[in-house]
Length: 122
Image (tube, rainbow, N blue to C red):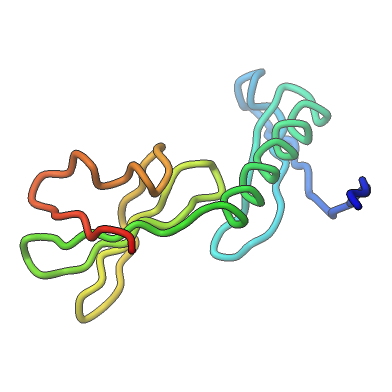
């Protein structure tokens, strides 16, 4: 049986003094590894955009699968879902470094990358 529910989350809305009109307010939630933020010309618009981003983040966590590739230097590259709908890429060798990102989901992350070989899913 499917049942609808309402969820309330504590978000912070901050007025940005001196900002462009379309970025007058910033709504944000969370702090790990960084907050999810959205801007708007009004506090309500910023909260509405933040709500859409949180839905995207929850969907990415629920439905997203990592994608793996091997770089020519021997590193393993991992693309994981990003809260903004794209993917964050981690280079894994002696350390792990998450220095790049893509607006595409993990499934499409390494398809056209030079010097990388996709590791097929099993």
